[in-house]
Image 1 (cartoon, rainbow, N blue to C red):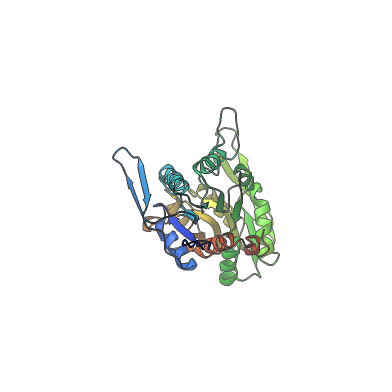
Image 2 (cartoon, rainbow, N blue to C red):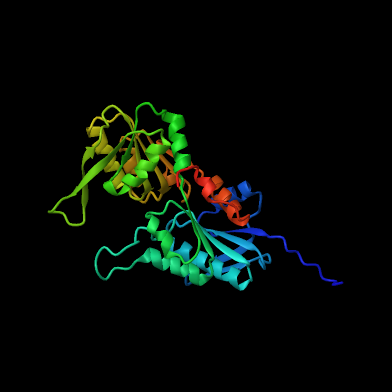
Length: 326
């Protein structure tokens, strides 16, 4: 009889980069685990050093990193963490990216341009990631860039429930900020009891290159509560312009709902002055006090991430978390 005992039980370990540690703490609380302690520091020339303070051998590792500015720093840190786990003999490594970096660069618009979203997927794979968990990609095709499983989660259920609780359904219209988001708007409409749809028709000013201006509303919005949906809000120019167009078309209250609150300057000022009754985002990205304004509501994405991590760890069904919205 061998004197050695072998523990074959699986071991879930959660790791957090420095991009959004508050979110990692929320996810850890939902999972009833601790964020694995680590040393992470920057050298004088900007190089990043990471070392985990516990053994990771044989573990099922989940590396959570959000990607606010400076995005490139946090992406590099996540790659280094994954490499450290691979070299530390982690059994499986899942990269958790609530906000997928470079997602807007998912195709070539003109010659001699990169497809940076594909490059990020290649970097994650090369570093040692076996799987990706992410939330509301800019386009679904990014799932195909990674050579491995991608769990593409959606915050729509959580956002729609907040809208339902706050505004009812009787006079609601779902509005897409452009024709490219109509399919997403259709899913929102289904989630909101078959609410009617509208979208903002955009035209380009031939005298101003590379600039889109909102033109008119296609659909009935007069007197209705308009739920203006998008995947992210960066500088807020497009979405604030859409609010203006809706108001000019006679809309009642306008509520903005988006998953990712990038909120680069001057987004807070634009949104605060846009006339929107409420701006709802999740905390896939950290939103510091300087970016907050009276109409802003921030919902926690931690419960969704924790449930997804749990299903992946237990080899369960991630699809069951979509509640019919997939």
